[in-house]
Length: 577
Ligand SMILES: *[C@@H]1O[C@H](CO)[C@@H](O)[C@H](O)[C@H]1NC(C)=O
Ligand SMILES: *[C@@H]1O[C@H](CO)[C@@H](O)[C@H](O)[C@H]1NC(C)=O
Ligand SMILES: *[C@@H]1O[C@H](CO)[C@@H](O)[C@H](O)[C@H]1NC(C)=O
Ligand SMILES: *[C@@H]1O[C@H](CO)[C@@H](O)[C@H](O)[C@H]1NC(C)=O
Ligand SMILES: *[C@@H]1O[C@H](CO)[C@@H](O)[C@H](O)[C@H]1NC(C)=O
Ligand SMILES: [Ca+2]
Figure 1 (cartoon, rainbow, N blue to C red):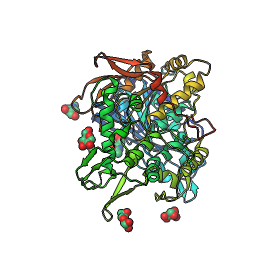
Figure 2 (figure 1 turned 180 degrees about the horizontal axis):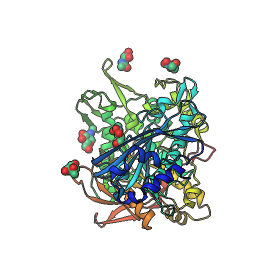
Figure 3 (figure 1 turned 90 degrees about the horizontal axis):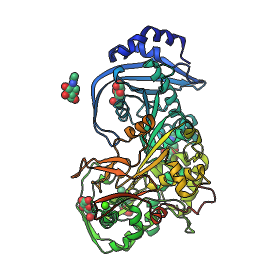
């Protein structure tokens, strides 16, 4: 579907492209000639919107998902609109490698929080592998605006176009446009394979699943800690507050930190090696009771921070871990329940920081007070009550209110944000591969959420096979790796010797392009005294274990441990995938 104008452009420059330098092709005229004008019905690409600039010897720093790199690239920003919608403009940003570095690859990148992109920061992760890398602004008005900035057209009125763009439309459009633009720009023959990939974490992980569940645009995807099962995930951020409210106890942060520290110390050796990392939070659940922390003394020095979150100014805190503090911690780990004690949702693993359980110091009363989760408030105020504010109060709110909020969001956004469709036949049928990673000590999206989804896909797609047979089948194309000690989309601040998989896209490329099926996933310690040390991560449902006094590493099958990851959400009569 290449336009005739472009065919002429190719003819004129075909011989040139292979020998071309970045400066030859990184021009407005060349880019305009390479635009895939007719690639999607209902979309009009604005040729005059094209902004092109070449950047030489660009150095990107080392991130959690890819290492440092230095490269030349051509930055291309363009705009398109949806036919029939007024004042509609979607911006795309592509970074294209120099012609001699291009390796027939395309990479879509995603956002985090309520953002659909990560600015330019994820793009080096593609260019360094010879891929064109793309980001979208979702049509929200600029790369800096988040979905919740534009979600409400007015109080009470949803901007459904923005919602659906965020939900899944924008990424599909970017992939289709980006792939054809890549082919045109590098003058790829029709018969030549362009490998398409995805890499993002958190909300970006949800965005990845939104595509894998619907399309076969990509040959492979690296999805990290996806913020999916959205209606549950967002309300879940309010459960820690609810747990405190139910106990009518608002612990000083230091008290919870003491419980965390003691949990890490006690559970660290259960995986067979005492290295400061709880690689087996399941064994921690089975063998460690945090009641043992009651009466232990804690102390934290005063902090004077910049006023953001827990880094706000706090007084020195000291005392003994209380029974109420432990009850709050147990309720958090135990997950959301309704007033009948039925299980509404799953929760974080022991050894995750108590990120949702933030309390605020009130100097007038010299006491700690409830501080409602901002993510939870954003969800209930904007997405459920449709009010443009973040003023949620939990006065009068009960466990059953939380359950009602989940149900309301689940119904309203099931087709757009929930993102747990478990039948991946389309993607799998086209040969697509998935590497799904999740920090086992994630404090924002529970690691058990990813396990639940993998298990849903397994049981829906292989209903007639035994557990181990279906797990093996699924692992042929979709593998889930839990990352010992890691927090949310990055290494932990409390378990600094823990690894992080920094080369996952390379592993995926080898799987897709060279048919090298990964077994364990390589990871590296990215900080602290063991920085640079290599690890291997185990593919679910296998679990890591060191035997022979910590000298022998294995990925073992341990039914009792696996069982701890399976939550019976018996508060619902519908399946929760
Ligand atoms: C590229 O940048 C690096 C530092 O980032 C510098 O050492 C090197 O000289 C530069 N090369 C060129 C060709 O400019
Ligand atoms: C993103 O990259 C483009 C192309 O190099 C550049 O023009 C733009 O300023 C970058 N944006 C940011 C926020 O750095
Ligand atoms: C928790 O452990 C960290 C070291 O990982 C230490 O810096 C901190 O002081 C400890 N906090 C408490 C309350 O014990
Ligand atoms: C601190 O507590 C006092 C007394 O209950 C209350 O009036 C005040 O609003 C609180 N301050 C903040 C910042 O919440
Ligand atoms: C929307 O409602 C909130 C809460 O009542 C109010 O603070 C805000 O001003 C309203 N916004 C508009 C644009 O009316
Ligand atoms: Ca350990």
